[in-house]
Image: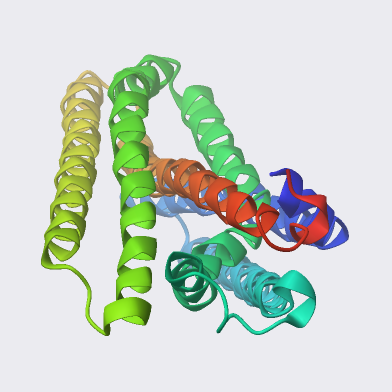
Length: 302
């Protein structure tokens, strides 16, 4: 994160402003949806329903336009960082050729400039705006649902709470395998420089590490998705009973179920951001260590 601030601090302010605009509109479609459903069931005026539908479409268009601007701006910041990192590697050791270096060192630099700088630079664009936007959406939607029905606050905590227990240790397991994979890929680069082909054992090792990462990652996704559908089932069941008892309107149940759907995406994106932060932090540490043996790390990295 220190590198992110040093390399793109002022752009992060602009990205944060766009992210705030996106999450500021996140609850509006739910409220409009609730009014449309309730008015339709209560035989509301056609004019009111039409205007609510137009307002819903307008809010959605504004939200998606802000997301478009945010994504393009993010991409520009990310690609600028990737270019800066590659230029730093190109100028390593004052611009001297790598041909006279040891094979392992040459292979390391080859792996770094071709593959490793992409995820590091790519993370710069989402480093601050992504968690800000996703946390903002979570808080906004949970607050809106709690405003409609206080019991949905407990439902939201029951949905997110267990995931906060199993996600961190699973992510740490992914990080360990990611670090080992980076080091192995660099050795493969050295093998190619020295022998023209990599050692078979190292190729097998990369395969094992990748499969280990996939198994943990997709198992985590399964558990998170199950928690989401379980929460929706509870919301529909409890909400349906309350509708039968005339304690709430059907539009409220629809809004709560939609709200849970809007929680699933930002929570998943927030977990993905945390995964990228952890893995890219490992990559950047190894990147800085490799540069420390050659040129000065970019932007005063330590």
